[in-house]
Image 1 (spheres, rainbow, N blue to C red):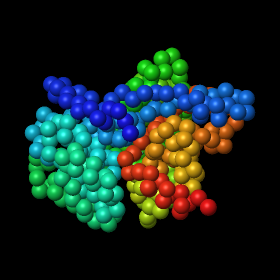
Image 2 (cartoon, rainbow, N blue to C red; image 1 turned 45 degrees about the vertical axis):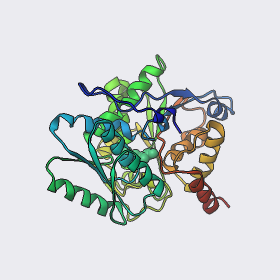
Image 3 (cartoon, rainbow, N blue to C red; image 1 turned 180 degrees about the vertical axis):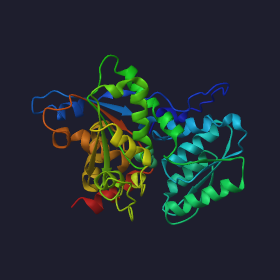
Image 4 (cartoon, helix red, strand yellow; image 1 turned 90 degrees about the horizontal axis):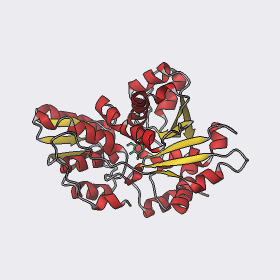
Length: 338
Ligand SMILES: Cc1ncc(COP(=O)(O)O)c(C=O)c1O
């Protein structure tokens, strides 16, 4: 758990102040070593967004969306995510002196409900699946013109806010240009922010690949690429529930076509994710969600997933996530590792 969480940041709201923190970019000794064993030296950098105050990268985009509406006389922030997006909305609202209502499906972890309440959010458990929950959230906003609906990923301002992570990496790496950036994909808000950041910094014109990682059973982007059109999954069967958008943002497919060859999609298994979560805990002392573990599977196996003697300098977005505790991890391990 992160140090910064303890601190109550009270920003002056005279201008758009950041609710997220600038997270460390750490060269991982362990991962660099593991991925240099065949003689091709690699540097693996970890962007530690698991240290963000709300527990994940989500505060970057959602914080930005909420702050850009502060002048607009809103009296309530409404989020339909019982996951990290909801936590980010609740945290950003508390920091901005706004009331928040977070609607969550019945599958929400009790620990997350507790955390949401600790940010003074009102919590409404509604619907067995997210689509139902989201419909209710929109209904509430339609009835209250002063309420701000905050979607989990599909909003231009969210992508713009998420872009801050690339701006930070751009400065943190100084003159070094990475060969690729690895990130997890749910609905696409994170990767769209990364693309936005590459555009803003001019890095989009450099030879930097974006590696989009999903898990089997939460792979709507990969399915859409294969089909050549936006595909909606029937159900989410992966343990990586935070990657469980049935359909990704249409903008992501647009960019996939526009920036031909820049984005590579990779799908990993839940079993690989759980094994990797354990390795990462041992090596770096962070317990992350399966959604984040997905990217780490690639980070631990660059030769296998990205090719031998390729990609010397790799940045991995450690997106974090709060829907995990030791008990959940041990349960995944019991179920998936024979
Ligand atoms: C920890 C974590 N990582 C990755 C993602 C995927 O982000 P996106 O839906 O923006 O693609 C999420 C989404 O909730 C998340 O909570």
